[in-house]
Image (cartoon, rainbow, N blue to C red):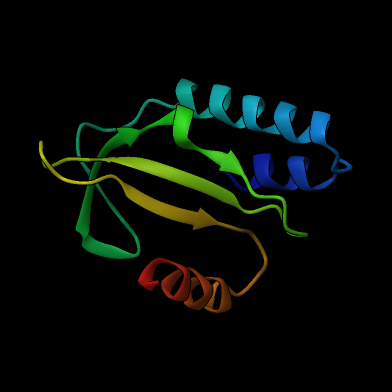
Length: 103
């Protein structure tokens, strides 16, 4: 995941490239052999059974974090959404998302 993130960060950002980056990310995530059930490192309660590639994207901010949507292992559970970014502190992004979703 880190090497894919570094590769995507090295490309210039424009509308065409952004769409292409989303496509590459989704294709790479679809190739991953996910375990039947796994916990995200953010919380042991976030049990997942895979990823939803069609809902994953590359954000347009400077560091181009990945917006990853994981399938909830619980049959009726909502998906888990996670930002993945290398070499940066995500606490500010987390606060921004909390404010955004609380409105």
